[in-house]
Length: 151
Image (cartoon, rainbow, N blue to C red):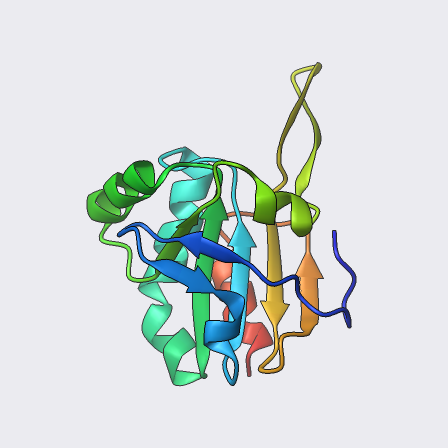
């Protein structure tokens, strides 16, 4: 996990519609950049729907929400349409951004060890500096917790 107070790594990734997004595009706004393992899984769906339901409150507070996983643009599009998600999902199948933000880690599941995305949420300030970092994310609680961080 990257340290609070460090400059957030720059990136350029396609969203669920194939449009490119760069971190620099959001200068002057707070960015909630959250990394999740996989589209359409129960925890990831709870987290995404939570961010979507609260999206108007995030925008009122001058923040944008960007979800990142190693799923494809097409997978993100289906996920967005299935749940009516109101924010941007970024596709990182090559894991460039996932690795730059240090969220590709060894995971243990039922005694089996594998590599994967550790659910992590970063809050990046208007100047591109990480001001909060959480890698102990509870999917269902994360959206409300991040909303409270913005007050």
